[in-house]
Image (cartoon, rainbow, N blue to C red; front, side, top):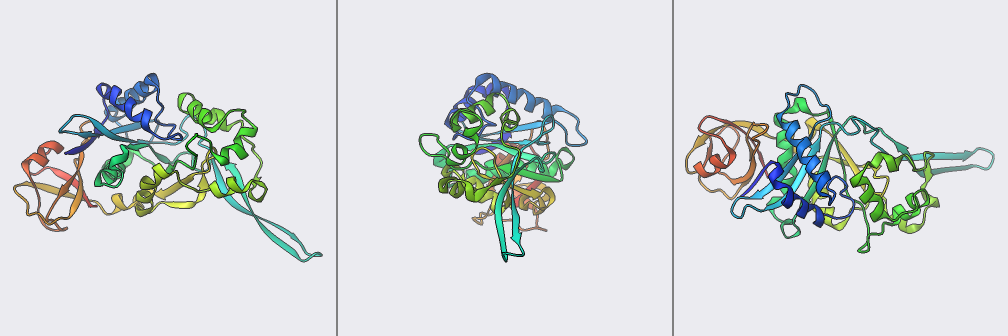
Length: 338
């Protein structure tokens, strides 16, 4: 059985193993023991805190195989993007260049450096062992944290964003970075992302050009990379699209990958989830999979269960599933269809 739960310090070796396997560009998951330990400590403090509005909290979840005890994935939620420093993105815009005398009217695609998305909540740190990419585990790893958001809405902002990893080749070179960022920081893309993971994205972002960038002036390879998703991030991106995120307006300033955003209350797993009371028993197997999560904070748990259930009907859980969730007869759980 796979269970999503908050990370704890004892998970550090397994988390570092996952971080080492994550693609370049997942800067929120650096392969650095000290930074990962700090990430877990911050998460533990966030889960333990009494919170009435979104602040500097950061929540980090792991996906555990209860049979082996190994971690197979992780993901996180930052309550406020750019809480202590601006959260930079490139905004896709259109400039109009016109001449009445020459009867010329041109619309030009430009990228404008902005921090429009500062203050929104941020989904981060998604990584799953590659062999599980096309399995329901990917849904649990991505959407399970959304059930936590749904149950603790006071901890998060009214809108949510995700930086999806953009295109880079097998050597770790990104054409978008090479066309823009490398002219201002004389390092390659892999080194830039490593520095972001160890220090701060804002530190590097402040060295980027502040004036609009005219996309037609970029090399073809860089233009093609705008909004492109890294192959290892495609599964996560597809899930976000099904959840109702929009991908047209913003891109990452380093690799050009899409920065997607949505109203928190409109995200599918949040808007469509329901609170139901638990009844213990042996449910009929319908073949329909559901995400089920308890209502706890520090003891949050989420899993996938096969249920014969429809809204308005009793929600029957097997005792083993209820035990894994840490709930009993009459407890409330949040449930949404896969």
